[in-house]
Amino acid sequence: MTIGSERYGSRADTAVFAVCLVLSLVALALPEALRLPIASALRRTVLLPVVTVQRQAALSREERQDVLTLRAERDSLALASALLPGLRAENAQLRSLLRLRGRLGYGYVGAEVLHQTGLADGLTLLLSAGRREGVAALAPVVAPAGLVGAVLSVDAHTSVAMAWSHPDFRVSAMVEGGRIFGIVAARRGETAGEVMELTGIAYRDTLPAGTPVVTSGLGGIFPRGIPIGTVQGVLSETAGWERTYLLRPAVHPAQASHVMVLGLDRAADTLAAAFDTLPAPADSAPQP
Amino acid sequence: MRLPPGRLKLAAALLILVAAHLVLRPRFAPSRFAPDLVLVALLFLAIRTRPAVGALAGFMVGMLSDAVAPTTFGAGAFALTIVGFVAGWLKAVVFADNLLVNALIVFAASWARDVLQVAASNQLRGGALGMQLLVVSPAAALSTAAAALVALLLLRGWLTATPSR
Image (cartoon, rainbow over all chains, first blue to last red):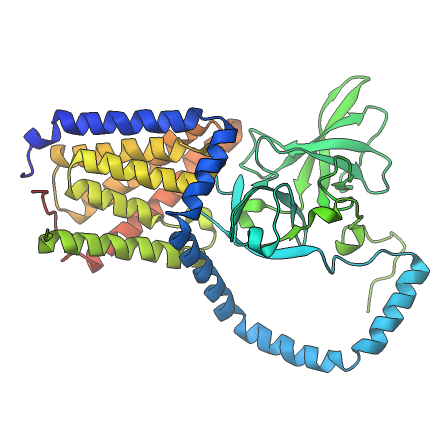
């Protein structure tokens, strides 16, 4: 067959194209209950080598980038470890005196975010940890700065997380102190995944700009105290009824590279102490 | 059955592009502007074979990319099926083994893929839609076209427009 118009206009080409197009439309119309198992089967079979190569590439990049940092940190740690037992005991005493909870410390699995091409990257994230590493469906996904999302489906060594920027994502939120509660979702129509909205705030309650918003712990999925974002201002209001606030997110899912997947057994915990969200007291003196 | 050497070279070039995509892409930041070498491989294949092969390959690549983002399952397959078919068909209409023409086809295909995928997935609206289609997608298409140019220069001997026989 040669390059020429006769072979391009063949009915076979058009038929194959039509079949592929119809199949893709069928895939688009599939309900989520069918969509997730099919996607999971593809990830476990055909895509397994691809995901493995990508995970290894991400790991080797980390190793190369971090070697100097790791060396410096190892030296510092060796020095610091000499003082550790005394400091740990002292810290435990002080935290006990202040009635502070423990830091994150346990009950999570570290994972790399394997970013993909396509528009859905940032709405769903492929994580490099799966069932074998202890990840379970609906487990909360957090970054050091705050909430990223929740696990949607789990394979043996990978999992897919629904980021907060996904249109279907909702999380129960509160203003620190537990006085005001609302629901946080991605603000659709704004720059992809850049901002959130906090809805359901009673009209009598006003939130000044800069107020930190954290997970409330209601719903049994997300532990209490994970930073979600900070208030930017009022987005809309229903006079005499409720206000909706615009939030600046604590974490941008499309930029996250490392995350922690929390265990489901931590849903009842309060993790506020694991994140630095409390604003500095107004009268606090600057550190020397 | 033995494949002709031209086909083997094409297959090797496409494999190199896919491997480069997997290895190099994690190093590219920010990732939303990173070149999509799998799309480049798909277009090179579609251009060098027949539209049906382009459509079929586009469908399969799309399904696999949808599998890692199941929230828009089918949207990638839909977009890449059309892009693969049209790329094969376009090559018949405006055939030219010219670097610039190839880069232009890659740029247009990358942008068109995003437009089709956005339309099929229905995930973005308002400002986000405008930002994606008028800023992010063209920038990503530009980096993909630049990567295609580099690939063509490096693998030119393997990527000569071999008609399917």
